Image 1: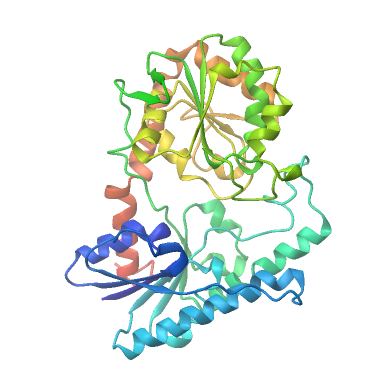
Image 2: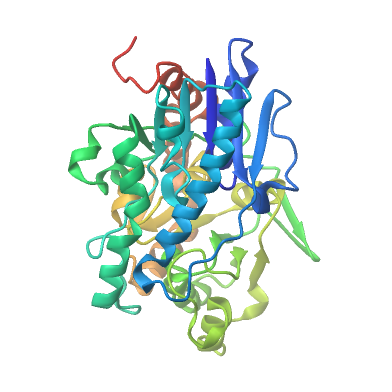
Length: 413
């Protein structure tokens, strides 16, 4: 079979399945991404032909603010369509196309290759109320925001209408899509490598003169970027009470200072500087360590030495880091929000806490640190659940491969 994967940041979420398909002599795999995103990227697989489309278009200043994003998505869709026409002229005709619809790239693929099955990766469908927007009263949304996000779904809706099927990593993420599309969306996580993301009582984390191991009392927090969408403000406001209750505890905070989601920090600074300033006299900063973004090996060691791992999120896309922390056997204290409840059962494989209640979070973390033996079985169950339901090699990847080779037909044997 012939497969075409399209993602502006190729391979994106398709890394493992594209490589697995390319391993088979029966398949031909082509990957497409935006030149500015993938030009310096190492070769993913020697049998995957990777093509790049140049793209630097911006919306016109005269375009209505609500549709500027959509205008750029249409331009991007045209750029991908031109590249697809070149592929077609070269003799390549895919059986299955897999694309992330958020940037518009999937909109015209079905017109270029009408015989192929188009499958779109349904990561998140925006709502004016009831999910991330307006969730946090500290960052209220306006009617203008609500109307704008309705238009933000335009490229996804065009792509969904043209698609044969969709795939979402969690049931909650699928539930955010319009009811008329949900029965065409398969729920399947990309999976994590639980054989690598495993507990290690001998692990040591070393950085800039700091050396911590499992013998130390370490609170960990991880996010791509330190921002309210991932509960950074609640976590920071819990630290004074946590550090008073646990005088030996150290805190490792992993993540960058950019903004992945939501609005920028007030005043043009970073959320880290904002909350450090807010809490400046309430925290012993010698015990709080901001690592920035880490290489994969160091990140794993952070999870392996963790005495208590904190994960907080708005009702939004579930982070890989939560599943990875569970795989590493962390004692996880997480927000009692809908995406998290799909993975964590309170008191069984983790502890749930109110997203906004910094005092409750501090109490839950301190309790885990005070009585670590009481949470040993919870750690085992956390890892066992990942191995059973999220393991890349034994569970998720085989199902991805089977589903795509069945052309997105869930009932095909």
